[in-house]
Image (tube, rainbow, N blue to C red):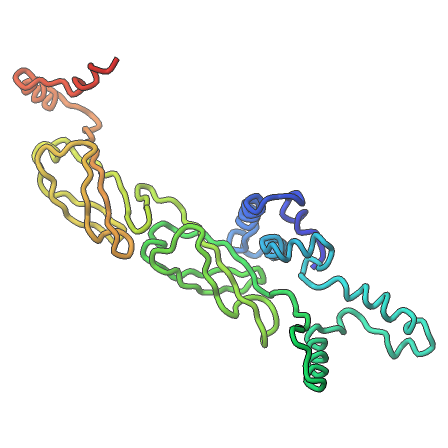
Length: 305
């Protein structure tokens, strides 16, 4: 795959890791095969975007690419140079065909085996390590719902080459956490790399979290606040009933023990909500009550100058 990873992601050569990640996520979402069913162009672009991100998100690979040591696929560029310089005299001679080779004929594993053979026969060379191919690991980014992160889930990810992969989201996974799928990367069947899936969590309509604890604001009707009683409250694990004391006010925080994530708690902040329309009956009842029970809830603010 030819090309410049910076151009593919639309970033400058001095772009930060965060800039690269941000642009990759935008492009990956735009060209994801699931959002472009049947589009070969989108699938090809998605594959190209992932390859560019895989290289630039790895600092060692990125530095090697910037120095001109590897191409976008992570293959050493010195192979061609070696061909041109080390074998030029032989290739131009009468017996040139004996020494000529192409880059595709050269395999780093052959070189490693060759040095290993010499090392064994000559007693070895301490500290010497033959060159290895660049990593065949691949990186993916997925988005999941808040409740999927809280409870755990099974997800199917579409790979850049069009294949699908079923992964398990562990209960309580956190924003930005990476999952390692051993042996699910690129490379040969004999020595495949690993796949790393970076997980991002979509915000929920009313749940938020801090570690294992979950927070939510719960609306309470006027009569529920005044009279108390049992009300139904939603948690990440489903609805539960809880007792509300008489006179429970806006801002009161209640704890539901063990109803958070992986044994954490859920904290409920009450918010009194009046009906959409205040009818005559309610208005008269409050007016009558206020005649003998009037109070000023802002009295504490009057002392502030």
